[in-house]
Image (cartoon, rainbow, N blue to C red; front, side, top):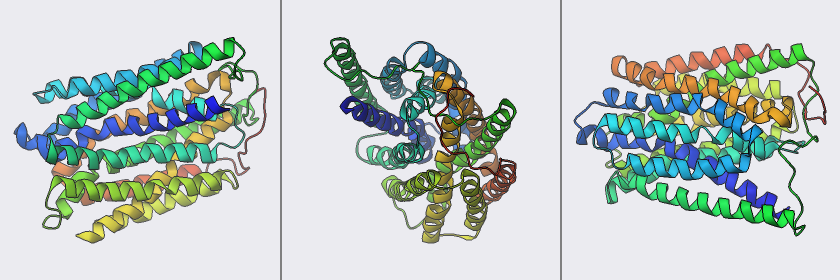
Length: 405
């Protein structure tokens, strides 16, 4: 039990770092690299595209290796690999060099979701709150990326925004490796409660017939792809949008970082409310409400300016972050433990592939029409999600112990 709690702590930290590293460049590009490398924002951010392609494409091999080899070892590779990639990114002197290093970041970042989430829900009947708490850590990584990167830019320089977190991740990886090896030795010697194997026959999956399972999983994949488009667009572009709409109010990169941090950190806690509700009520109903709120609040953002932009951003990000645990809970409930990492990998390869496509889309829309058009399009996407949710079975998908799918 003690090791289980420690394991969950590392998984939560890993989720924080996963999203943190992916968004360092977003803030650095918006706040300093455009000036240092004499390139426009719309020309620079596409260099992050390959990173998000790798973030999606590599989830499948990561999930397969985790199920067939070791989830714990894959998490060690995650911590060490993403930290080393960040250190390489700090050495970049051109957009192309940065793009190559960011691709490595994406490769190692792809490990977390199919592996970490499978470890988190293993053996649990109620997964709403654990996933929600884990999601808060991930979104605090999103929030902290803008703030910490801006702080390093103003106080030390943009390279330190990659160097210091990279070193920290390397140290965490070495520590996690030592702890897992120690736990394995103790288990072999009978000195601790043996951990459940990742191929344990015990499971907590909802019993669904094959046709229903395929139908539900297809809807999960579609809605999570559309949700990924909204999530990536809002989290990646928010520092730039705030920089534009707070002109004359925010006087430095750190100011923009603070505003972004406030928006993301407050909104992240929506997941706790949603996670609690998922363990108590129908997923379908909760999902419908969240999607409708996204559509409304994203549309309202087009009418705001000045400090009202910050308040509006908090409100729509509450709805955006609130969707995150829903699809993860659905996948966890309908998937057997033996292949759950691969189920999460299939779900996330779709999400992250859409997120990769989103980077050049943001650049094109922002450069051609501005941020208001972006919000209008995202509001329409939220309505599409709402329509898809109507196709989910009305019967609540509650966790049940199952030995077959």
